[in-house]
Length: 82
Image (cartoon, rainbow, N blue to C red; front, side, top):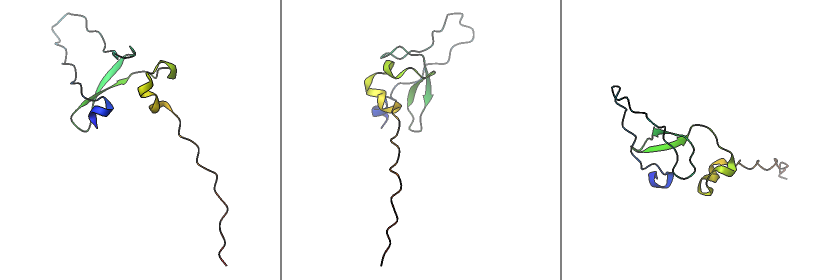
């Protein structure tokens, strides 16, 4: 499940407070969007976008997450039994 979700990468190490080097925020290697790394329930890490990008900028493999669910069918008429 982790591999199919793309949750295989380890988190970035915590920055040293005494290190004056500039820390660049992580970006998605596929689309270049700023991401934040979160732990999952199965001891893996997943990178999620910090802002919602336009659907056309999302790689096709991940567009299923942006689709709306179809509206349910209208209720049918009750069936009367003789």
